[in-house]
Image (cartoon, rainbow, N blue to C red):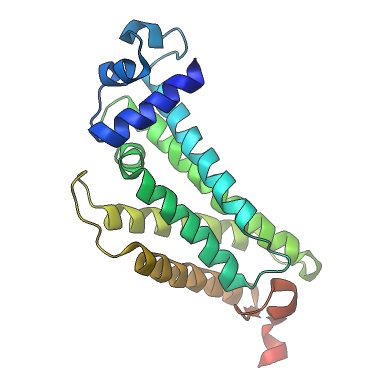
Length: 216
């Protein structure tokens, strides 16, 4: 029943917008509002479950679409951004609900949702680091890149969607994907500069990464 309530919450938020009430979520789930608390300790627990569901959806969409050992770096980033933007475009009000935290009960759970999303970028940073493990690079730089990249993507998403359910998209989806990919590649290049390496985004990592002194 817990999973079914989260499903209903997605549908209600998609339709009603980020200001959806718990009563409207209960109605969508075909149950009474008090019965929700049989499955969730409080509103924050439900909101956190919604954030975790979005994280799982992102995870299952992004990672099967990339192979960091064989795909060029730009292709990895572009496919990840493409899947992310597709999901945001399918559930814009859920994203607004999680990012904007309009209810007092959302403050903590919104931050947890942010952390769930950040975990995906950190997982990708781990993938890059593991692929380049023989170069013995500083993991702190990868972690910093993960945080910075997620922050940029979250801010860009908030801008792209606009604040209201009827806000028009600031850019067509395909163009937003291209621009956000370029921004992400810029973050990667900045991290490479910190690490003293250079990366050819058109080659797989194990082929396209060189120490800066090797290409000076």
